[in-house]
Amino acid sequence: MTDTQDVATRPSSDVQRPEQQVVLNPPVDICEDTEGITLMADMPGVSKDKLNIEVDKNTLLIEGDAHFDMPEGIQALYADIRSTRYRRIFSLSPELESNNIDATLKDGVLTLKIPKRAELRPRKIEVRAD
Amino acid sequence: MFGSFTQFENSLFDDFRRMEREMDDLFGRWPWPIGIRSAARGSFPPVNVGATPGEVDVYLFTPGVDPKTLDISIQQNVLSVSGERRLPINENANYYRQERFDGEFRRAITLPEDVDPDRVEARSENGILHIKVQRREAAKPRQIEVK
Image (tube, rainbow over all chains, first blue to last red; front, top):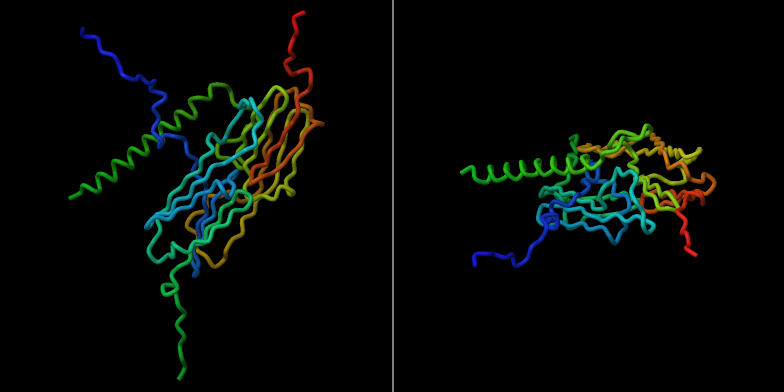
């Protein structure tokens, strides 16, 4: 007997590595002033409980799942948005106070305020006239 | 010595290849002709349209737009949505990225011909505007009973 038998067969379409899932890259605006950095991201459909913001060392991860109210049996006729998962990663720099990020979510727009460490904020140097 | 560099390059290259493949997957699955009123990919706001036998559902992704300022109208089976999104500019800040849409927008969406323009409702939640248009009764599939 030379026949071999697979213990378990699996169609190749089932084997999908998680990183191959289509992920939306939310568009962002990033600006910096003397207080710190402000990041705004468009994440329509994401509610507060479906939003995940993580800081690990110098990496900022923003991810969220969009929910839209769909009737049963709906079939797509046209779609610009082909996923419900948003994900984007940024690297931070050490002068930012990454444990003190303020996040707000309103109408699908996420705003993150990342303050600079107080001792590293630019200081105005007063010139004394003697 | 350059081990960490090449490793980085490889992973970056892999990422590009993966992206290319994803793009192929996305666009390759669109064999039918595009609508005459359709906008270029990447236009604001992105739109999804779906249908059931009873209704047509249009989703407009309009984050940060006050839904009350939107002008939504329907004529026959063409739905038009226009409005604007003005982003506040912080004068004292340096901008590194400005990827988000700023300005006026307008999109027209051709719906199936059997929609009833008198039965439309729109609601907005978390930056998604959901417009529900009912279809005329005659268009719904009817169950035929065998006597």
